[in-house]
Amino acid sequence: MISIKRIERLQNKLRPSYMSLELSKRKARFTETMQKWGSINRRIFPWRRTRNPYQVFVAEILLQRTRADQAESTYAKFLQKWSDITALSNAKIDEVRSTIRSLGLEYRAKRLQKLSREIVQNFGPKIPDNLSELHRLYGKGFGDYMAHAILCFAYGKDVPVVDRNVERILERVFSLQTKGGHRDPRLWQFAAELIPRGKAREYNWSLIDFGALVCSPRNPKCRICPIMEICDFGGKRAGD
Image (cartoon, rainbow, N blue to C red; front, side, top):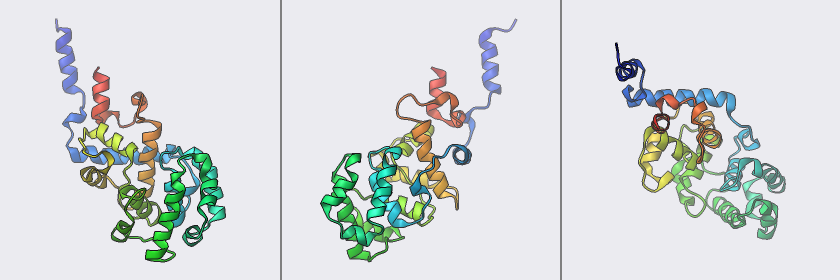
């Protein structure tokens, strides 16, 4: 008579394990699954219907530490008042502050005004389409995430867009150890290796949404997660 322990050992040998997959195959499966999930579940927002660099820039500032659904109406009002970067650079700070007040974090008013003026002063009415020039804007409120979001969502570049959602997903799935959180260059490099060529916009949106809807900070929905079979974090939870 075969013991229960022996049956379990046999089952474990027969059961395909993500641990046995090469990292390159796990990466490929991850990217493919994210694209499939996004094609069905990706959210729709007005800033995702545009390739206008200025409109992407405004959206990303308004979305900082703010839920997407909260920013929609303010985003529309903002663009009605200031339709381009030149108009915003000439805006009065009190009017900008009043327009975005409902979102809280009023320091963003100064951030919008300051950055718009720097852009116009350095580059004229066009936001740059390359990282070397965007680096000149780096400072408070503008860094790797903002620059890559503009390059990807406005200009269609195949670059990663790493926020805290993406950081959390990659740390959980691949057991990445980062220093400095989502600013870690190694995390950005790893994320870049996952980008599907020519499909970065949709993929990055899917990843952001997946972090908000499934792989959430608290109580992630591992039971319905489509990448459970290759996820280190999910595998540990299932074994607990």
